[in-house]
Image 1: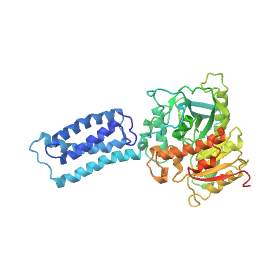
Image 2 (image 1 turned 135 degrees about the horizontal axis):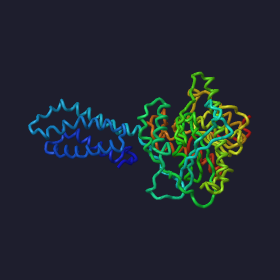
Image 3 (image 1 turned 30 degrees about the vertical axis):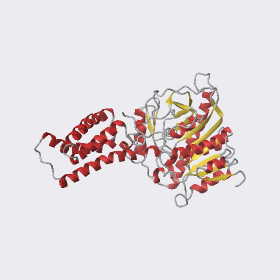
Image 4 (image 1 turned 60 degrees about the vertical axis):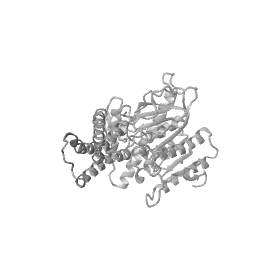
Length: 480
């Protein structure tokens, strides 16, 4: 009764509460013979369903529904217990009924604008498992703290091809290992964009398609690796729909939390580290800070790859030992994470490909990028950002492999993450592709690229990518 119905953005219990509230409002306008039965039936349904919602977890979107029903209820019930009670004249009752109806209508409207995210069905042949690991680099001090003994720690979440599980096996929590962590992360994300945390109280209720700690898919083959860095203040789970889709096609996706940069990182010992990266308002200083933070993220990606190589060489105790193809690795990221992926690949030739999801390149542009790269961007003009396109074009032109820039029509910056699944569908925020189309386009384009450059897939990569948007191809030797 508490599972969200796709399309309605409400659970069956919430739908029952909403319908009974509507009947309480309109009962006063029904024919005299129908009023008593409608009022009694609506009240009998509304009271237990409202109580059940309060017990199981009441979302803020249902508060105006409850308020409208509670205000309307006395006017519907009072004539039933006072046979001679005079009914309020219609022209006096109408404004009250309209006001209650408007209150109730804001409930489903708010649930539509801020829904519990429902993840798109996976199109690959594999089921998906997930697990969370924590790694500490003994050779790298933590530069965000003053403790000389503090060492850089990252939290990684893995999505991997798994054996099929029965339908009743619990799915993984979204945004965290459990609901408490998910609420901590959700509130931190809301705070980071200046919104009250309650607006996102439905996000921690979401479940993904992955199974926690599911057995690795059989067959003995090795899976290519996709390392991912989130956007500024982003978290490892911000691209879960994308990661699960890639894993269903046979990739191991490893996304990182970057402590003191990600909005909130919950460590294995229960400590929560919040973001310490704050802009100064001075453009030059902010650019310098962003370059530094990008370099830290790039080092995190390289360190994570080293740990994955060690995991793959394990003695068999780890279920992924011997299953990770560390000779086929893509560095990927969104926004600042995309910049980190470009920088990591430029200095670490263990990476074989790069995917930059709407990330402005930062740091030194030398040495030239040697790996094939796909840059997915929203439509950018000199009026919106005069530096972005020239900088990105310079990076892709200087590369020694064939590189691609794909501009997605109707995309916005948050189109390239899970944002369209739970944010209001405002084009300037999440683009105009819609909640179903946004993840399909981003995953489809990246899968086409990965399959081509890491699996000898489609020989007409340019033709395939062109179906998703406006493509520019940078061949080696075309530029400086």
